[in-house]
Amino acid sequence: MLQTRNSVDVAIAESFKELALTNSIEKITIKEITDKAGLIRPTFYNHFQDKYELLEWIIQSDIFEPSKVLALQGYIDEALLIIFTNLYKEKNFYRRASHLEGQNSFESMIRSGLKNMGLETLGGKDVNLPNWWLTKDRLADYYAGYVADVTISWIKDNMPISPKEMSEVMNYILRTSMLDVMK
Image 1 (cartoon, helix red, strand yellow):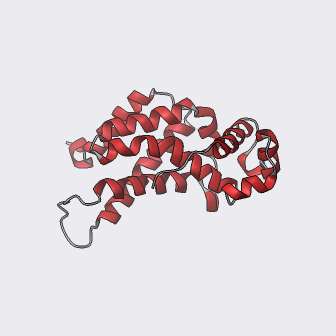
Image 2 (cartoon, one colour):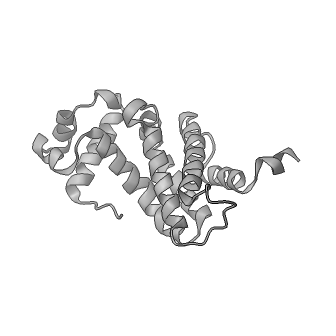
Image 3 (cartoon, rainbow, N blue to C red):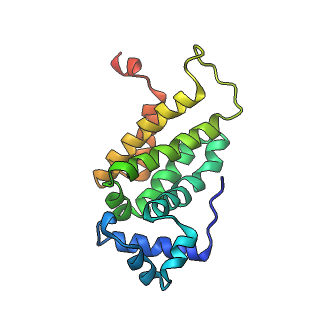
């Protein structure tokens, strides 16, 4: 699903990102977001249900949508590089967002986006799985959780290596089994 990016959505998102640099996301109000964007509160609700839906939209449109076309064509290395590069461009915002926990956690948003991208990538492909229990859904869920955990660790650690190095690390981990590492 392609995220639509109209000028109001972008203005609301930019306002939210800017406020998140100096305020806890949990404490940012819709009024603060709309005031900063020069909009009225009802306009926000015409576009988003709440600030957590806004955050999810930001993650989808800034992180996953730009990399999805490459992933669908099998260019996983390049898709990962775009994901890490886009996270890095707004590292302060994403570092603050990464601390959201609970029902609307940043982790669940990242994991969901990665799982959806994985399922779309696997989509109509014939995948050689060892038995009926290991489905594309379970496989996508496993990798999404794993990639999300490593990505969030990188973010919370203040992104100490470059996006290129991070994509190389992720490629190594995704392509190397634990059994290969132990040999």
